[in-house]
Image 1 (spheres, rainbow, N blue to C red):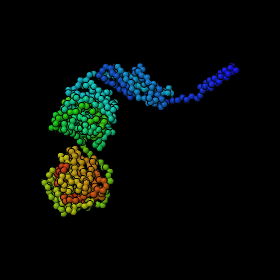
Image 2 (cartoon, one colour; image 1 turned 45 degrees about the vertical axis):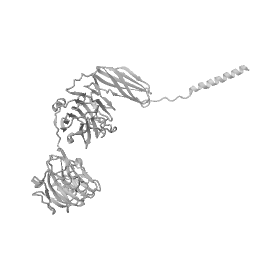
Image 3 (cartoon, rainbow, N blue to C red; image 1 turned 135 degrees about the vertical axis):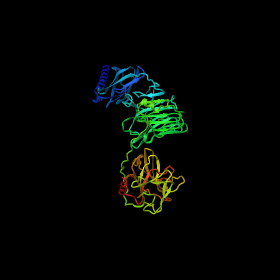
Image 4 (cartoon, one colour; image 1 turned 90 degrees about the vertical axis):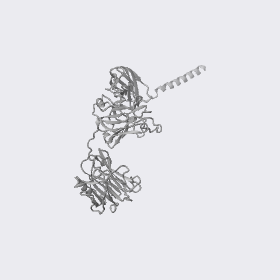
Length: 602
């Protein structure tokens, strides 16, 4: 019986063993089928690039990326045919950002080869060949304290130190001087120490403009703004170079602090560049103990004299290609432009010395002729024909025709030869004619006149119908037609008072004309129908929004040829240009009428 019991136990064990062994035939997980090769990209050093260092040997950081549709299993890095790394452990099996440092790289041509393998045993290879050269030690120019040529690195050739990078700036792959240049990027810039900066200094560099940014900081040496840590804008110390949009152009400005205040170098139209021109432009800022000058392409665009010296207290770092971190209160962040050949001197270089360094001619800036603006294509109010209720021809004197009013001379206005069709009004800073408004002001009002610009005046009042005010700048009643600008361009503007407030009818670029324009320019304004309009040379240059109704309360006189007496708070004094053919209408001049009037002088 014991024998049979043992046999039964053995049979049971055999059955269990057979059952377990049958489990080896269970279905296995399906193998991954991958027929797509991985992708390998070497980002640095770029193929065909040159790395120049002051040392005979250097360390090279290889940066690359591998991607695969399924799973990366291996990445092998070879340098000049020798394997320097193999990576088989990946956190993300589909994307790998690799970085490998190779030391003791000497002069000559070197080749990087990176091979990636995926789970399907597919392979891909990328190569990059670059050249390492040893730079001859740089001999600084007289008083040169910093020089960054940006030839594939951010090394200062004078101090032999590398600038600190913030964010991820790059290289342009081309340069104005040499083969490469700094390339700006969002939230990226460089910084260098400034302990050797002096209050007398010169900064010089080249820029190839980025077309996307509407403003940026190009360079900033500022003290910390402890009162505004998140929007720093302390301009009382150091200096800043910046750019901002001006229509389709970019205007460049410089600013420096004298301790308790700041000084602006704003060249206006002289400092405007077209960011789409694809050209390299040279910039120079020169500051000494009492004066400062800002140059673009050798042209003096702005200067200041008899100012206090620049104060560098607390200015411990220069930001290059951004206003950050200490000049961002007006959003002058990183500049995406390319910069090349940055030089800084602890002396105020002469124009002759800057010519020697750059090969440019330095001197007074010149501007191209300003063309008459184009038609902006605005919709005009096309009402009934307006009726003329006042006319002054100025052919003999200041007699008013059509209306029965009498003009009063203030100061010494005169009539002179050379008018549109005879003589013309000629005034000066303290002269105008005053006309009572009785019977001339209506809900619908229009005026027409001609002007031949005096290129020496920068601003003036042309036609003013204002109510008195304590500050001689009450704009809540009546209207004011005036011009302002500089000796390059003049912009015409209309301001209308609606009772408690005022409205601007400013055509901007469409109302901007050359200050040295030799011919006659026709001007017409209309008020009524809920809008106000400005016509220049027969073209509608500006129109207000809806519901603009003029308030004539206390407007008892028309000043022709000046802003005086009630609109001089901004120095819009007497018009020194020639004026002619003043016409006032009861009604809104329509486009056909204005076309007829503007053709009369052409």
